[in-house]
Image (tube, rainbow, N blue to C red; front, top):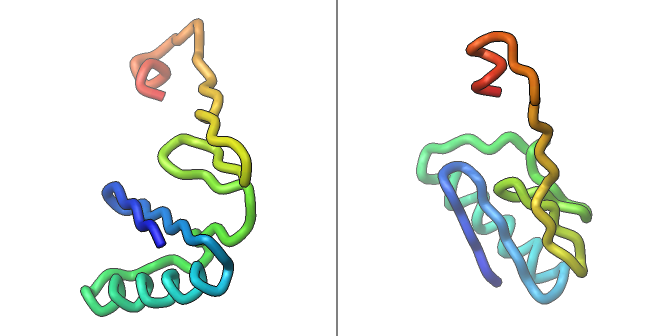
Amino acid sequence: AIILHYMDDVLICAPDDKYLNLTLEKTVQAIEKAGFEIQQEKIQRTCPWTYLGHRITKQTIVPQQLTIKDNPKTLRDLHQ
């Protein structure tokens, strides 16, 4: 399996579902043993997946589209 992480985002890839589920289970156990909490509802189990601003399907990886406000009226608008 391949495990990629950045800050609090983790991506787990495996050649088949059995190996993926085993790796996910062991990864969750290790994270919880280290004292961190995992929000189960944030685990993406079905395609398409989103990771670090990319939409991942079984065949492609595409950056998510950004919406740009072209007429910001406040400083807060600029930061969004």
